[in-house]
Length: 203
Image (cartoon, rainbow, N blue to C red):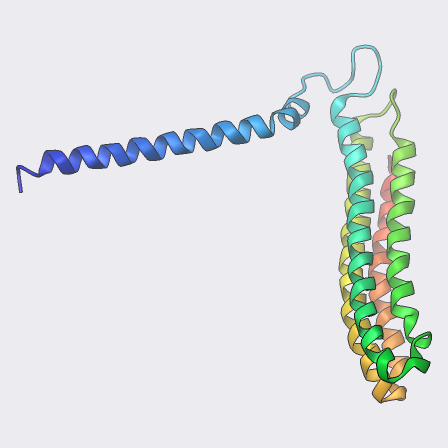
């Protein structure tokens, strides 16, 4: 046992050194990949020396605009696709109910309009001069509020629309209940739009 101890010790040291090199390599890769963002976040002048807008404020402002549009369109796309699958399956047996069952698709598309409205408002608010960090954070919050609430509402509309149109084909009395559920799911995105407008006005 004593003769094998130096070999075991050397093997443990080799494994430890290999692990440390791997960790240092990952840290270097992460720092290299996120270096542009870190440079923006580590800027020392909150206000540009020539009176212009700082990098931090404009970065968060444009991120808010893109977040609002991207997340809202993701929710609208999921709701449209999920409801469209149910409408297509139901339309094989009941083609007369296709136009009546198109309501979930319309309501999912409205969510994308919410994101477009906030994205346009935020993009107009971001200016090359006189745009503070507070305005940038407010625009980011507005974009995330509208985008994430639209994503949640789109998922709810898609799931309810898929099951609702199939059930409506078999039992027409379920149509009113399906519409009410879709309205309350759409209200989630409307809540985010209201909060996003308030935050955008504050910016």
